[in-house]
Amino acid sequence: MTPHPRHRSPLSAFIRVALLASSLLIVGCASKDPSRTGLLEPYRIDLPQGNYLTQGMIDQVKPGMSREQVRVVLGSPLLNHVFHADRWDYVFRFRHPSGTAEQRKVTVFFKEGRVTSLQADPLPQREDPADPALPGFKQPAPKR
Image (cartoon, rainbow, N blue to C red; front, side):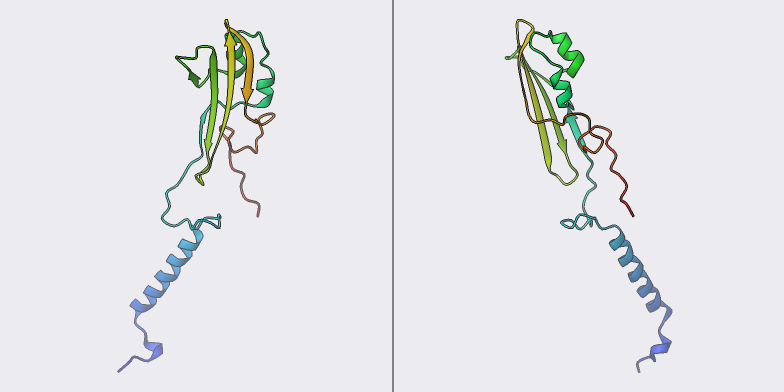
């Protein structure tokens, strides 16, 4: 004999409510990125590494400046080459939580302790609060 639809057990009602609640929790935790589900994925943080430089900082470096003057403007270089003592490399790498990465490199060349030339990847003109690579960047809250 099958029970009448009105006489379901409290256990089956509890199971239905639990399934509905867990479904709502899963949907609520899903990622806003349409290419990702957000389920069973590790949390990934923004990862800036190296020297964050802007074009404005690079424009302050002039031929003939001493190493100490360059250090004051740009900071200490990330790489000091043992075999290339007359070259300072400033490297900045930013890994987005999505896994994509961007890298920026600036190389300063010296001769007899003075700047002779400079090579730089395209850089932001100045510190832009909307640049996610800026150390300390806070993602703006979504507008509702």
